[in-house]
Length: 429
Image 1 (cartoon, rainbow, N blue to C red):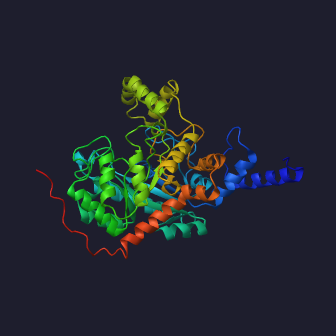
Image 2: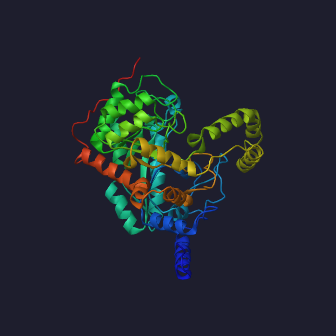
Image 3: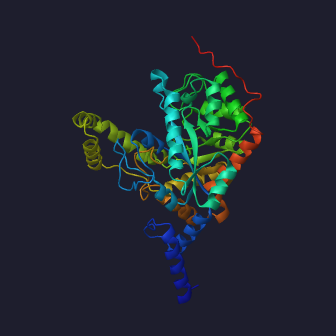
């Protein structure tokens, strides 16, 4: 059926109007009418991103979210993906800022101090941008932020080292506004195994107590970064939905950071959500292989550059970028994100998949994607593949909101006093 000239004019007007709101470039070869429809759906949706590491430069580099970060680079040489304008352009309603603490603190100490610095930096950004940002801790507050046309900033701990083996500290983090905790990062805690560091056979007895206390408080258990046994142990114990705040599907790319199919099926029964990570090496086996090969090949050169520019941060950034640009690798396209969404939908169901970008926590994004402003690309690709508007909205945020509301219901009145244990972990000698 042919479209009339009047119909084409209406499509063009609609496209121009929506493009003025979402300013990212239409994908090459895209259908303009379908792109306009995708932007319209995206604008109406509540978009909740499960993981953003921009909190690290807020503390370490005094980064200001009001700064136009397009074309700017972190101290380590990686490009920025986030600022307030980019979040708004990307249609974000809820953004979980990562309270990231390295596993190195298991030896050096200072985990809780680091976390408090990051929590303070997060609150300060909201306080100085009240017209654009608002702090949130509940599903209802995220929905309210959508009506206010504000970006709702939430917090999630990345790395259970933060609580320093103390339920007192866990409860304090809840009081400070934290609403999920990734049980480990890349190193096992004293009570939970990481995806590449297995010491305990999953969760210890204290680790299971941590899970129960998180249920009681109203804090998501996050199984990103943990071992498969830890994932299953958490599912055995938790009476509330769990999440993977930034992990993809192992059935598409067999990487330890991704979630295997048997766990996906258990997450569906649990009512949880797997939020797809955008890092190309987690999305695609070829990209992962070539990135690892490049890292090994350039290890000595990168070390030499680091020594040469140890007192010149900008010089270091430029030298690193030039070296990497001279040694390009295959970078999977943004459409691979939806390959993972497709797989999780097939195995766990459409109600159990979301997005967890890992913006500003990864060195590069899929080809065609530059930062938070490009989130509508995911919506377009889902629409192109035949996803309904209802299902697209589920993936973008409604699934997380449903799981969060259920998690809050399990917690009940979430009084700090109650049935939770007050004892600390008795560390093995």
